[in-house]
Amino acid sequence: MAGEVALRKLVDADIVKIESQFQCLEGAGESQWFGFWNTAKLRARLAQDQFIGAQDGALAIAFQDEIVGKVDWFTSTTWGRANTSACWEIAVGIFADYRGQGIGTTAQRLLVDYLFTHYPRHRIQATTAAENIAEQRVLESLGFTLEGTVRQAQWRGGAWHDQLLYSLLRDEWAAAEPAAP
Image 1 (tube, rainbow, N blue to C red):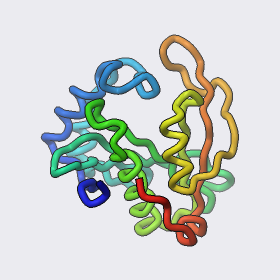
Image 2 (image 1 turned 90 degrees about the vertical axis):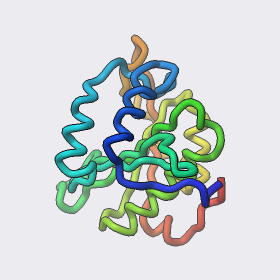
Image 3 (image 1 turned 45 degrees about the vertical axis):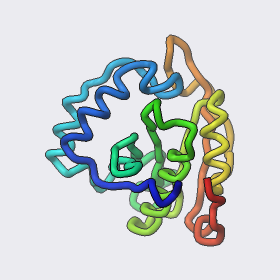
Image 4 (image 1 turned 120 degrees about the vertical axis):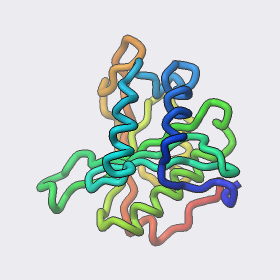
């Protein structure tokens, strides 16, 4: 499957698909449904910098040349001064019909490789809902280390939810070849 999955810059046509897929519980999934959101910001951001910024970005996940989701990265917590201690946090969203096929694993592997190749940050982190076992397995298969639980950090579905914090360091990524999906 890895040869069929690629990351590419987002284009206008992708925004319509992202809106239709992620604007409902069924499309976003329980761990990613936070209610309706202003999708006009997507078009504005695309026009501004094609989702490739100094502090964050997003890419389309293409499977057999069709968009099936997106990956995001953003400057997360700084563990000291921002100019020397910032890290990326990554996120993935796969359209419902394409989940469970290894596409998300491959997309996150490609994103980690992209970020470590093109940006000098040393740490990438990811958070996932404590109940999202599938994403925990993906992160662990990519070499991420579970650092702990961030208690009641996310408001979703009318309740507070714990998040698990994972991290991966540049040296760890360079030293290991993550297992194939």
